Amino acid sequence: MEVMADSSSRIPSGRLSLAAGEAAGPAAAQNIALGPLDGRYRPTVAPLVDYLSEAALNRDRVAVEVEWLIHLTRSSVLPGAGPLTAEQEEGLRKIVTEFDAASVGELAEIEAVTVHDVKAVEYYIGRRLEGLGIKDLTPMVHFGCTSEDINNLSYALGIKGAVEDVWLPAARALVDQIAEMARTNRDVPMLSRTHGQPATPTSLGKELAVMAHRLGRQLTRIGRTEYLGKINGATGDFAAHVASVPRADWQQVSESFVEGLGLTWNPLTTQIESHDWQAELYADVSRFNRILHNVCTDIWSYISIGYFAQIPVAGATGSSTMPHKVNPIRFENAEANLEISSSLLDTLGATLVTSRWQRDLTDSSSQRNIGVAFGHSLLAISNVAKGLDRLDVAEGVLAADLDSNWEVLAEAIQMVMRAEAIAGVPGMDNPYERLKDLTRGHRVDAARMKEFVSGLGLSADAEARLLALTPGTYNGIAGKLVDHLG
Image (tube, one colour):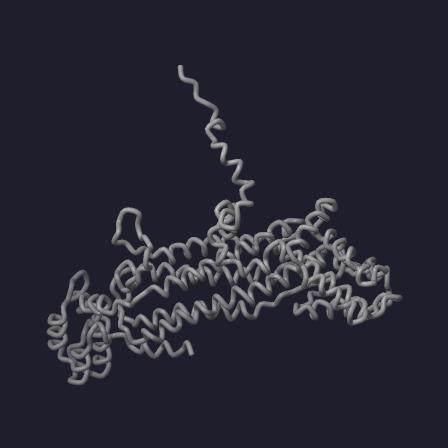
């Protein structure tokens, strides 16, 4: 009887070497990254690293601690700790501007002992004060602060920077790209498909304008995001502050500090800033994602029926076995990444607004995924932009589709008949039913439609208008509506 070997014996020994293979170089490191954003997609999402990575968070923590120390000394809040010299302030700020890979390593070594990331930052700064001639101010580093005083401000700064400097510019550029496509194709007639069936024609430009308008509204909301911050102690009551320096106006000190960082002061918190602004932001970004997902599915569908032709990329392969194929992979990739991003953003928004009593740690673990959520969205935006760049409008296909669906004029004819009836023209009874009998479930060509119109007994003006109408010209003011994009 054959004995099955234990499955573990079939695991290639080379697996273990992968974890240690990063020394092979950047390309190899990308191939063995656990997640795709730090692997194959790293170049696309790299701009977010300076804002939402662990290293960026630690740099921002150092920045907040340094600025708090400078703020306290400038305000002479603590007796015996007056303003620093310009050189000393510059030296403190160099701790931030010179924060590099070696700094990240040093912080990690300190944290290995403290087992506390923010305490490690405090010690990291404290080590540098003697060299600046202000070792006596070491007790002022992290003065009156709880970890969340530093964390909430650091996250707010990182998220604000990522949104305003990276994500929003990319999203705005994409919306501008769609808007420009809308303007270029404003008067290109196109058959509509409500419920997937031939319907009242429109223009390609107007349909693209709808997409740009929807996305643009969300960007306006995101651009108005209020980034809140607090610095008020262990339970938000300034208890330690008042106990140590009772005569200081700690609310004013706190408000001026937070606003000096470019954030909005939140006066009422528990130990944590409540994260409501984050939930609001993530809901807006998630909504943008879902609208963009709709753009992807519509463009993908237009490609599938030939409205858009894809420009092949030299040397690229569409299928491993079917040489003719040019697949809409950019839009498919974007769909997947938008779904992942929105799922993470929804989870963050739902989790972050809840904290047990004055503090629990669910937010700490959750917020470490903010960069991942924005990374997948940024990757999708990049893919959609690249996909749109490789599209050609197949105007001949659009025109042929319209010419094959003369029955869509039934709406126009029955509405003209209604208007004629109101004006007193006889013989205009039951217009809907008569057009329904003519067109429902039937293909009607130009000749049959014109014959029907000619036999209705319309006024001369109405008959002339309908006989001149074609599926390609029956789109109202679709082109003019594009002007709403500005």
